[in-house]
Length: 256
Ligand code: ZN
Image (cartoon, rainbow, N blue to C red; front, side):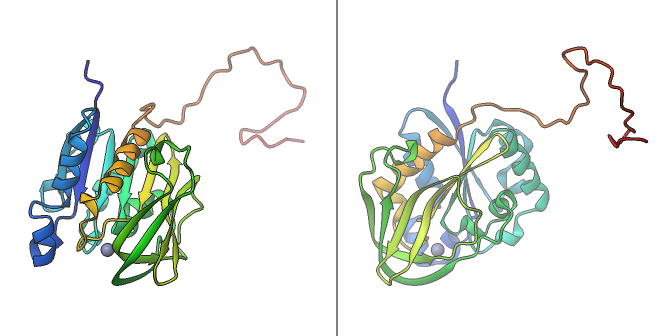
């Protein structure tokens, strides 16, 4: 029996084609680097999908086989078709896991799942970032230690317009003074969602072992525990219900 976690790494895959510095870092795309690293864990089957493929690489077959979807997007969020977003949302509500990286904070799927603007402050001057591990007992922070330090990062600062996370596990400090909720967990329907801040395309973030460790742990945390299709049935009572001496109308309103 195949008990491996089926992971789809989705990437917009545009900066890698148009920006020489990004192309040099990620010649086959960030998705290829993330998938190769996760593939080494041994407990995951990796698949990749990109924006410019038919249906953005997210056909019904791919969506239905995916246990955990990883999402990186930035300049082309608006090109992602609403019908695909709807299918992904349905699958998450049924139990699929979603991991949103960095600039994916403005993706249609993230904003759809959370229902807020997901806006933030930003600055790109290659400053130092320290991500503090504030939940050392959480499955996603296992093996991470007290903090992760990135020598050069794009800054994301509060206020991050998100619903209060069910669990906040990383808080970032930046050299320029800002702080940011960098590791956030939510549940929506039967699915688990993790947002992880690092991942700016011009820095070698996805070659960093600690970053890959967090994403690996997050995949294992977000894998489906159940997969339940939504319905809203009218049901017969399990026990016989005694007749009441009051008269309710069909909308449950007392008649008199
Ligand atoms: Zn960025």
